[in-house]
Length: 358
Ligand code: F6P
Image (cartoon, rainbow, N blue to C red):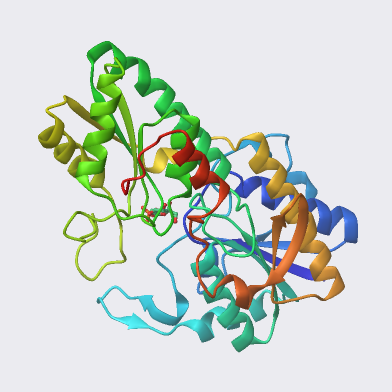
């Protein structure tokens, strides 16, 4: 068996831990050859394909602890609509499938979010090869699994940011706004906001009003507290329903800056002195925490076992303390948004945190 593996889409902490687990299980457990494909499916367009064998000697004891991905990745390389230098989009899927064949691979494990899994599944169906996927994204919006690799570390980073913002907010009697990532779902904002003692948390799933936010800040003042913490997910809209984007027209949607908009609205509505922090890619880099290392290891082992059983078109996942697998078709049907009736939202409301709508 020659098993291909690649990382695809935006990076996050824990990808190297997943690669390590796959190589261990495949090489040591089954005696297979593992071929690491570079830069996601982009590496399969090169001639010869950009890829290297991954043997147990790649493990010097540091890999599991390292952020990023040693294979490289891209979130701009959809082979069915590949952006060419002249500005056009070209279907290069046949080249990618040919690259897969040139490497003489029998099956592929792809580590990616829902967008990458959609593309990989189309390639596997067109090329007629077996595919197993491993979920990763700091946004944690992949369906059929409670956890994707990278999410827990991102929550830790955002919580630590609030731990650092709180004392300076209190020293200067300020409202601190922290903008975190989350392009469809508000999981990072909601969980780090609860863990970091936020007074207001705004997520894309819940429409907000400035009146609600101002009332919460007034209440904090009335209780005798001189500062407030506000967490906003990057994808929330303005009151006019507009997203705040950094991407140029025609480019893929890239958010950034809505924290400054919210900060301005809070200053106008309450007279508070406001400062804004945009956390950005700091949430994606750095060493994975213990939970992400565990998830990456469990997912890597189970993914290889699925290949060994010939169970393809499946994504591995985590549900109710079990490693599970689910049909990729179900995974890519819709993103997993915050459950508005679920325990995390109930906890936030129970703590009196303003979610923008009450
Ligand atoms: O999907 C993961 C994510 O980190 C989002 O939270 C964020 O909107 C996006 O990727 C940023 O992507 P890029 O690396 O292109 O800036």
